[in-house]
Length: 348
Image (cartoon, rainbow, N blue to C red; front, side, top):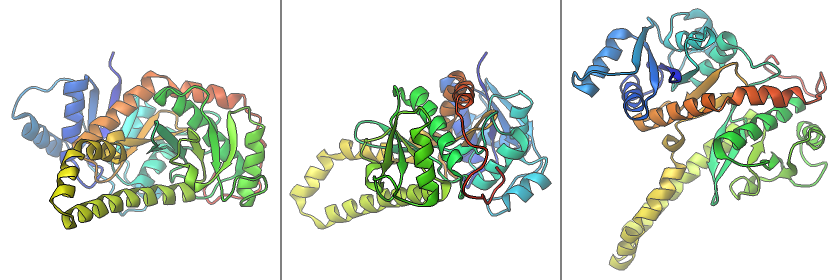
């Protein structure tokens, strides 16, 4: 039986057009089974536009009368809008009618729906957002990408375990090397949080290489980078900004150059396109929220149909590889302290 994915058709800046189109591509070309959740008339209109009346297999519509806007207060919206497309999609996962949920909408609302509707995976104190960062030889998995701006040391250890499982199953890395993002490599560097997390990670039985600095994130030195969501989100947005800036600088340089240099740029086009693809968020589709009692994929608000399709592929693979079962098993072997040196802004 195909893995069924509940897709929030109303979430994101380009919904429902881009979401429906990407979901239809996944159903048609990848054999995915999709539940499109949202305003039935709007979804049907988009399906008709894309298919031009041709029959569609593997797609079900689940009507939801409300949607959560990008600017709304996340927790308040999830609690108040019980019939929003995001909450209904999350409820389908909780009720085992779908194996995964995908939303390109309000990230904070996605996190709230994951916690309030789907719930945490057994043994997980804090779910974390996975970020994929390319390096020359492969991919670096970073977490947390923004779900938790204030953490305790044991949360970072759990992030390391979840990242280890993700790197193993999704990227095929055996015994992933794990690094803690810090301001220096030496013991004793960093804040109270990173110092205590460093000590716990050394005792956790993981392939922990120690503290790493910002310059190591894209070097391929480690396979998994661990940090709190405040640092992780800043790093992610900075990396996205650098990619855009470099692209624009290259364009400007070629425009100002002579014919020979421009001809060289044309010949180098395939190389530049390959690099652009690896830096493009659409290449990965969405960021898994690890530690949820189900599969929850959060996409970028401006996602294209290609990004939606790729995010559905990520969701299916995560479910098919039974990643949550392995995370639960690994966490059950960790002996973490009950408390922590730091209090947290959000409930543990």
